[in-house]
Length: 243
Image (cartoon, rainbow, N blue to C red; front, side, top):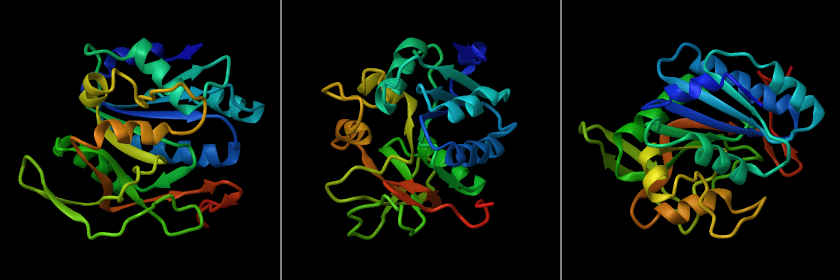
């Protein structure tokens, strides 16, 4: 079942956010309401929520979302994040409706509108970059690894300077990252997570990183901040949201 399917035809040159849900309803709700507030009435911006055969309480919440910029997809099985996203791209994305910027968002992550706008701007203006993530709040759920070196200064097409912290021998962490749409279509066989071996879990973000790392700069955008709220058995909900 797909809710608001007609919106898919409008994705051409848009900013498209992909979210795959499964469990932890309270955290998912915080994350989705955060991003819906940010993109509300933002021009040419859409979100696809793929309900990956979620737990009953998550399923009930996702089905209740009714937003004019949001497409809801219900899957009959738990395919895992990568396969669920890849199936969507294969079935519904082509050169005819290719987004300019694709944002992969795990629904356990929150951030400000300012950080979101900076991330989108960097993805649009830095064709020499592949995966661009946000920096993360330094809490027990911070997914950043191997940031040993100073940020790289990168000049955009319009001569603006962006700073990226690039992990050493390590993928850009997956809670949120942006990538240019045409890179997914042309270089990743229209798969957001181009795995060589089909796996339900594991290796999602590293599959994309490995595909892009030889040709593009990949890293975390300085001047942004996202809070990752869940990792393993740890939960780090910001105090202002923990009500």
